[in-house]
Length: 338
Image 1 (tube, rainbow, N blue to C red):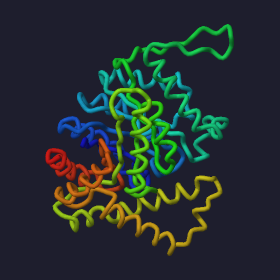
Image 2: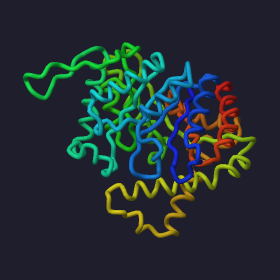
Image 3: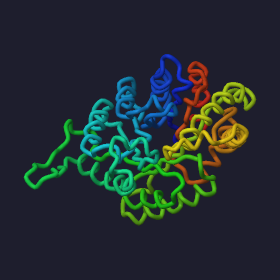
């Protein structure tokens, strides 16, 4: 079981030096054998809003590390022309000397599609098509122009890796897991809106589809978990409870406003408190890594039993940077214990 670091900060809880946790955490991950550092793409909302372009943050991570993989978790594929996507990540691959990787998401928040409004309805098909296009461009293939007289376009600089590591971001839909298996990518997922039992079924479906794709291996499944380790569960709660609840409130607002109608304003305070309270308890005791190293080991074994290959530890949900960084020493101890 690999451990990596995952970032998705809420701007409302960000400190003045917004990227210190990202860069200091990346250095720590690089020095202590973690598998990867993941940064997302998020637009026009405080939740995740300090990460509008994962190629930029990945380039920064690449510049301060030498070993750890540098990954997008995720790029919203329908918002980008595939040539531009391939160009940017070829630069990241060169800056990192062959450590770049991307998880592609179809997107869901309609406001984001101001960048490419026509892609919203067909976003799932666009994302699937982007997999093949990126692989071809990465391998030196050409991209045809919009007109018959246009020459093919090839990306520069040439990437270091001969094949681009790709994942599809999946959650509720079993079809997305199957699609990832069919096209031979990995899967990046989470436990925000699915149970561990449901995830196990989806992973089994993914493994079957991957085996039928004819590609070598079994694929690669990454699960994001909210994470903070301390001496024990009580100490972890003292630091994590208030920040995590604020973080979940911001996430709830984003989800409820996804249709652009601000339905989140109609949710009563009592109902919101109940939803957030349940979510907090679920992450604390079941679907996150909280407490001591020993507590986390038990949680990891439950996740391992789902046939997961890597846990991406979400560490930046509002805990003060110095406290979050101190918690990484225990996370490194967990990695050693694994």
